[in-house]
Image (cartoon, rainbow, N blue to C red):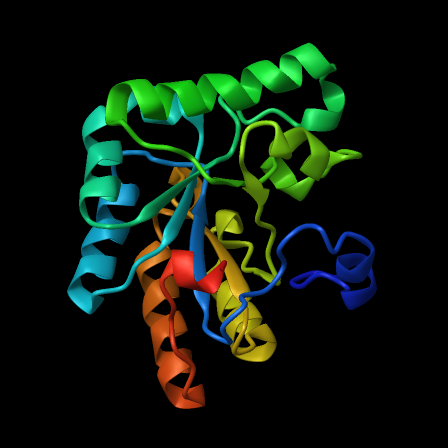
Length: 210
């Protein structure tokens, strides 16, 4: 894996996971939220441009931010499972892994009547037989082809990643955590500018992942 994108050989070895879109459109994803002060800004930006995104949320943040989670769903976005406590799965045993996955899904079902279909492992660290584990919970593993490192809070790193590494079928990772809140809007504006320049389109999550 290089600094921004995933080695194609690595993608091929782990081809049971989704690394790119299926319709040659860009899929915009956000990890680690929802949090006040960032997720709400992102939602406003998306709404202004009529863009739908996939939010890989952390269960604790969902629990503590009911209204923001409700807004994500009411505005037509998709929520994915990023575990309940943002724990690296290969540090857990089978029982703990099950708890991290099911506690998140149960929370979304009980509080928002929402069925979770997608999963992304914290820090992108997959475990052996990840897809076999996820199949039990009717989820698919969605990875990425471009990570922007916006959590480093350096807009120049983000700009380089987007300008040099974006492709028409990219799944892009940004973060709606507090780490990226100071640069998130500038990052999104630059992302949108580059897409228009290259003639790429942003796709609906469900259609991108069919």
